[in-house]
Image (tube, rainbow, N blue to C red; front, side):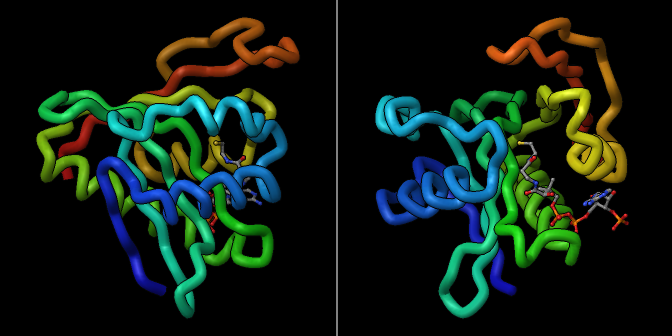
Length: 149
Ligand SMILES: CC(C)(COP(=O)(O)OP(=O)(O)OC[C@H]1O[C@@H](n2cnc3c(N)ncnc32)[C@H](O)[C@@H]1OP(=O)(O)O)[C@@H](O)C(=O)NCCC(=O)NCCS
């Protein structure tokens, strides 16, 4: 399993993100959202097995900013529950820390127990509830982690 990290991800990387999101994320972004997404202010950590991307974490991060925001983390179904998500998040947070990031925030749907469990395992703390945060009315919670490791 090889780990990679890119700021301003390449076109090839962008296509892989879009593909994995479409097939393995319940509330995936629309084609239009991806097409209008500005990758210039974003960083991606991902893992490959035999040159195939099997999961990624996408962060909103401006150069020199001490704050980063996890937008989504997705692992292809056959590779879930094998430590891949944890590996991607751990390595990505290390890379962001090297870039000067001190705090990483996120929002997660309150019914996404797998993701919440992953974030708690990684040391994320719940900040507050966000009523009706998603377009379908689902509630979310805001979580945050200080990068001190
Ligand atoms: C959430 C997700 C990224 C986790 O990735 P993963 O590679 O399957 O997770 P890992 O195997 O690294 O598991 C790490 C921890 O996450 C939690 N976790 C992962 N899958 C879980 C499950 N099915 N049930 C409960 N907890 C789970 C556990 O805390 C686990 O630690 P443990 O193995 O010691 O119990 C993956 O399930 C996924 O892609 N889901 C669909 C997309 C999504 O909802 N993303 C999050 C919102 S953007």
